[in-house]
Length: 93
Image (cartoon, rainbow, N blue to C red; front, side, top):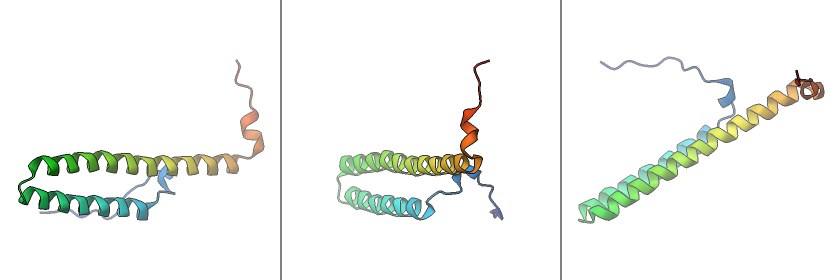
């Protein structure tokens, strides 16, 4: 029996996450998986495995970059909300 998720808690840092971009990257990955399946069916197992390995690494890097961008946007937004006096505290003690 499958359990359905009704709500997901997303950290505030990921509020600006580009979900459309992540879905697009996953779609590209699925197309490459289909290409790898065709290569495998044609008998070129080494090329199929190489394609899958390369795209897995690339997908992880690209999604990680999108998460990093969202974190930067969150940090900028937080700094703007804190105002100019937020960075002038003396923490030398």
